[in-house]
Image 1 (cartoon, one colour):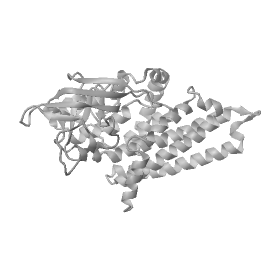
Image 2: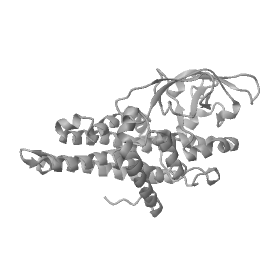
Image 3: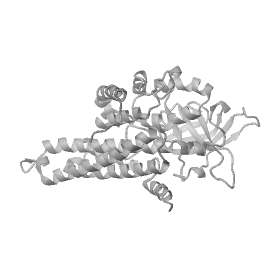
Image 4: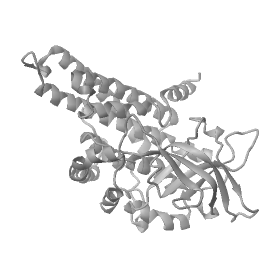
Length: 386
């Protein structure tokens, strides 16, 4: 179906992104999969092309263009080429908004140029062993080493499932800085822990089923001294900050889900046209046609829903419940479509040398991170007064 979401500027950016992905990512992707990450110099290449600094103000080396649709284009072009861009999506769409919204003037001067250039990589450390989605139950602590507002903070705790944790130069750590027995959500603070701070260590690099080109780590903090100048936003107010960006985080997952489902269909069409069974191209069988027709319809429904949500988000009007609806539908749709497409590959669909297998394993986490499908249903039900 015809889309009317993008302007000429977005399409010009798409050409830039497509050329970069085809020339600088696709040829090296198998090597990156084996190594478990995208090399740092590739982030710097993207930074030099302006891809990482679109939303960063011009005075810090960015483009000063905070239009979320540029992020959408970048995701779509990676999915079209059957690759991912490592932790770029997390850095641009999940982490950067915290810096943009809550960094003070000094922090902007200190960090924004490196973020735009791709020389500073980031991670956000929320999830802890045993807490999962219960952010209010966070046990990592930060205690002032003194009584003044300029006193350092001493951080202790552990985090897990941290995307980009092995490569990050800056880690936004969510820590408990006070306790209010009447409000579990009160008392959380964002502190930026920098690479090299004593007591900050990276533990295991976790082995995942999919998403092989982005590292996922366990992080440990033992008496890490973090200066007051590294507090992001206001002390004790982080729970509200975390909720501020959740709609975009969930929308981001949905963008990837729809784009990757569309790529799965394209891969299945190409394969079934070439593959013969009983002397006939698999694409000529009625079952193949029906399956791909159903998959295409599913994707177009998801795309229409997603594009409407993106437009609302750009206007600042996307509600949390609607973001949940979009994530729920698009991620569940992705799983259905990729599974049906893989089936058309037969035994070869189970072989990792075929991109459809990677699309299948990568898809599974979409129904878990940024809020599980079950959490999305809870949010939607609340919006219905249930």
